[in-house]
Length: 310
Image 1 (cartoon, rainbow, N blue to C red):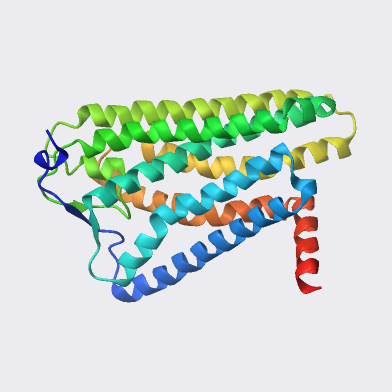
Image 2: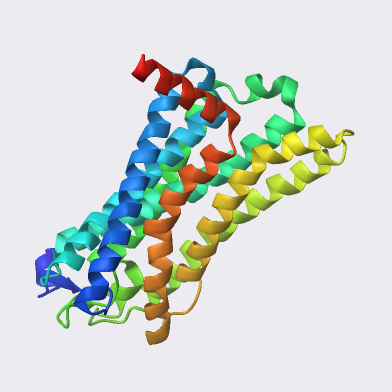
């Protein structure tokens, strides 16, 4: 039986942020500025890494992918959100909604998996500095990055397929800023207990597992930090991890808040605020956190600026 026979809803209305028009203009301006910062700074990071041969290492290959994911993940949600803030009609087609669900979870899942890989990379750099280039060879890094994208894709496929095959026969108002699994399950005219269990258990287990792997890497890192005798050496080692720890805390904190809690009417309202952090603020902060604490990136940026002005 075709998908159309299961559902009579061909479009959804995104409720978004329930504010007055004057306040919506201010929010629109803030979101627009944050999105421009996200895209321009992350794109700049990607260009710097590609153009500078000294940055062609495992750490910067991972950082290049983080910058790409920040741009893509935000672009799945924010442009449509800005259009909705500026207009009265906040419609999204059924298939557009399902695509938004898939790509949001695909890119988000890839990103948190990549953070675990990056923590392992930091462990190898601190624990085995002389063997680092051998362990984290180009081929190994490509395999690790590819695995992150594949894992993220199949994690998202579970949610998008299970959500798309549910019957939707009205109402069609999604009480969220964009199409996500939990707000859509509320609208389905069928038993969604299995879907809710999948969201909580699969996404919860996935997020928790990658988080535990990240924490495990840092436990081993702390063990090796105690072996470094000089305070300057310990400071240098910690500086390579501090930016990653800040970004991981923001990303995992939001993901756990969004997908591990049980769904209630109040929780869906709270999810909107958390979603703003996840899709608007964090992607704009990530490149700033990475570049401000990174001497190599600052040198490469200065060199690129000198070449452009010469």
